[in-house]
Image (cartoon, rainbow, N blue to C red; front, side):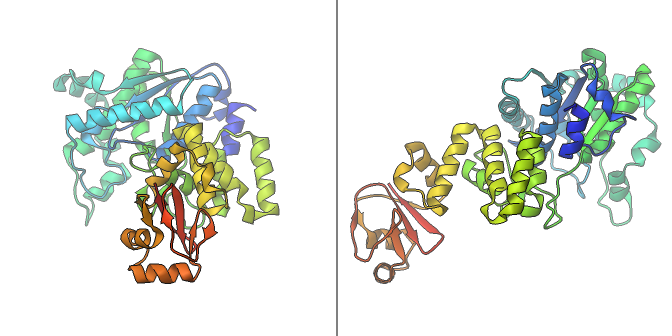
Amino acid sequence: MKLSEELKWRGFINQSTLEDVSLIDGEPIAFYWGVDPSAQSMTIGNLASAMLVRHFIEHGHKATLLLGGATGLIGDPDGKKDERNLKSQEEISSNKTAISDEYKRIFSGKDFTVVDNYDWFKDMNYLSFLRDVGKHVPLSNMLGRDFVQARLGEGGSGISYAEFSYSLIQGYDFLHLYRNAGVTLQLCGADQWGNSIAGVDLIRRIEGGEAHILSTPLIVNKTTGVKFGKSEDGAVWLNPQMTSVYAFYQFWLNVDDAGAIDYAKIYTLLSKEEIEALSKKQQEDPGARDVQKTLAREVTALVHGSQSAESAERVTAVLFGGMSFSELSDDDLNLLAHEIPTAQTGATAVDILANSGLASSKGEARRLILSGAISINGEKIFDDTTVDESVLIKKGKNSFLLVR
């Protein structure tokens, strides 16, 4: 399948300055995509755009992945109602390292170049920037931006000169990469369209050159209508310290039926035939949740590696699918220990239940055991017993305790 056909089928194409998107099916194009290091990790919102990048790389195009070390010091105001709090140089530097590591995982084994826009901004003279760049940017273009109008309009919080200039700074990135790396295409999320246009305009005005943008739509939960990637705890991050591997896996396992196939098209590299087969299974037996299970396994493997994905799969099967606790490895137990309460071996079940809070008292613990509400490794117990090895204690349907 040609790249343009695949992107259309998967739902990646939102807006483009290309009159004919099939132009991406021709000779290799030097393109770029960037992320500001505003946090220690990208989210699954960024991951959608990263998957667009993957398809371009798979079809032979030349990728430059940008770290916004300079733009991150200012902060993108688009979509924000209030002025951002500035981050320190040290925090930005740490975030850049973390996001660069995520680039390397997601695009492992692929050919790409990583650049940092701080490298070309750090020694730039302010007057030179105004003369060489700012002189070519009509103020009407910048004032016309939706977020500027919202911030300056009645009831708006206002906007600083720094945030007002953000799109001009990002636009210069495109100009710099056009000049120094032959980059003629920027890939971005739909929310970055305005900032990206600034770069196309600079290249046309200053260099007399032609450059283009292709944006991917923001992913929306079809059931709730809200931006995809939000959980009860906030954003879903790619960093396992911010969203654990298990929680990441569970997020995908529990996505809505209405959007599951669309998410598989965006977030996995499964072929059209494989996804159509999943769609057929979903129609025949939606309760089996084959799409969600495949989606969880594929995306977790892509972001965290196949071993972590398999571990999350086994832990889930033990907690909710009837798989034997004895089949869990030490790594699986470590993963599980970060998700549920833990206790130490060498005590009675009554003491463990009471001390862990799974029961409010020893008396309640005994009543729970006598009523058959407590199981150890899937087997109900009716008498108190000493726990002297690693086991999984379960109360009712969804309360768990790992004893190690």
